[in-house]
Amino acid sequence: MLAYYVKKNKYYFLPESAVAMLVGVVIGGIARLSVTDLTLFSFSPELFFFVLLPPIIFEAGYSLEKKGFFDNIGAICLYTFGGTIISAFAVGWLTFVFAQNGLIGHVDQDNAMEALLFGALISAVDPVATLSIMGSPELQCDTLLYSLVFGESVLNDAVAIVLFKTFHKYYNSEEILDGSVIPAALFSFFTMTVLSIFVGVSLGLLVSYIYKHTSISEFPKLEASLLYLFCYLCYATAEAFGLSGIMALFFNGVVLSHYNSYNLSTTAQTTTEQFFATVAVTMETIIFLYMGLSVFTGRFQNWDIMFSLLGLLFCLIARALNIFPLSLIANCCRRKGENRISLKTQCVLWFAGLRGAIAFALSMNMPGPNSDSYASATLFICMFTTIVCGGFTENILTRFGMKQGLDNDDDAHDDFTGVENLISTESPLARRLSADLQERYRTFWHDFDDNYMKELFGGDRVPDRQAGDYELSEQNDLYDF
Image (cartoon, rainbow, N blue to C red; front, side, top):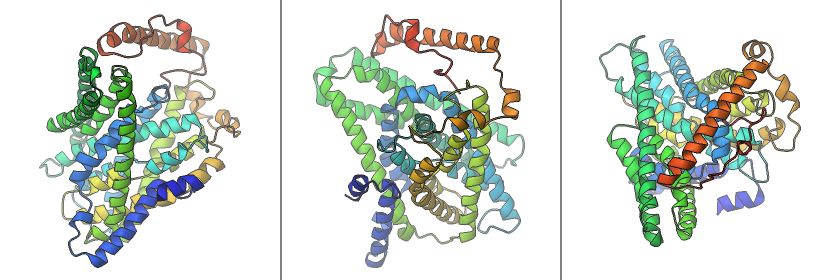
C-alpha cells in the first residue's frame, strides 16, 4: 500500500525499495523489543540465494528489452566485467592499506584476500531504487542512460558473485597472494563465467526445443508450470557444478524469451509474463524488508563507524575509477553522435552505482573472525545508497538533463577532447571497414537465426529480411561499444 501511495503521488524522493527498507526497520525495532526468538526476522543468505533471488534474475532476462541491451552490449560488458574487477581491486586495496596503517579496525592486516573479498561483494551494483525511478513513464529518462544502467545492473550482480566465489577459494589457501595467484584467480573467474553462460543458453535451447516439437501448448496450465520448474532446474544445475546459477539463469531467461515465448499458447504467454513479473516484485519487496529488519535483528557484534564511512568513500572512488576511464574507451569505439556516452551521462552512471541485497547477502557469507564488521559496514552502505542516493535520483536526472526532451545534446559533442581525439580513428576508410564488418556480421547472424535456430527452437521468423531492415547508419550501430 505504501508503494502504491508513493507511485500515486509521485514521491520520487522516496523509492519503493527505500520504503520497504524503512518499514523493515520499524518492524525489526518492534520485534527486538517484544520477541525473544528473532530467527524468523533474521536475514538468511540461503533463503535469499535459493528462493528470493532466482525469480528476480530470471524475470530480468525474460523481460529484457533486447534492442537497447544489445545496442550497447560493448559498453555494458566493459562496465560489467572490467568495471567490477577494477572496483573490487580498488576497494580491496584501499581497505587493506588503511587497515595496515591502523585507520580501520576489525580487518585482517596480514591476509589481503579478506579485503579483496569485501571489494568483490561491495562491487555488486544493485540499483533497484534508481531503475524504479528511471523506468517511470512520467520522467521520460534518457534511453541510452537507462539501457546502460539496466544492462550493467542485471549482469553486474552475477559477475560480483562469481568473483566473490573465486576469491573465496583462495582465502584459506596456503598460497601467498602474489602476482602468480591473481592471474590464476582471474582465469578461474572468466572460466566460471563462460561455463555458466553456456549452461544457461544450452538449457534454454533444450527447453525451447521440447516446447517447439511437442503438443504441450494444448495444456496451458502444464506448460506454464513446467516452464517455471525448468528455470529452477537451470539454477540448480549451474550451482551443482560449482558455477554461477545467477549468470546461467539470466541468459536462460533471455534465450527463452527469444525463442520459447513464441512456442507458448496465447493463454500461457500472458500468464507467464504476469506471473514472473508479480513474483519478482514480491521477492524484491521481501528482500528489502529483510534488509531493514537486519538493523535490529542482525546481532552484529562489531560495528565500526569509521570502517562504514570509509567503505562508502572507497565505493565512490572505485566507481569513478571504472566508469570514467571505461567510458572513454567505449566512446573511442562509438561514432560521433547521439550514442556517445557524454560526461553528464557518466556522472549519472557514477551516481547510480547503488549497493543492495546482493552485497549484503554476500557479506553474510564472509569468512573469518571479522565477518560481523564487514556485514555491518555493508548494511550501512546499502541503506545509505538506497535511501539517500536513490532518493536524489530524480533531482540528478533533472540537473544533468537526462530526461527526454531536455537539451543535453550540446555537451555530447564537447565533453571529450584531447586524449580521446588522439585515440579514436574517424577516417573514412576505417568508418567504411567498420560499417562493412558490422553489416556482414549482422546479416549472417539474422540469416542463421531465421533459417536454422528459429526452425529448431521457435521464434518470430522473418524469412524475407532485407538489408535495409537492419537500420544500419552512422548514428545507430547494433554492436556499438
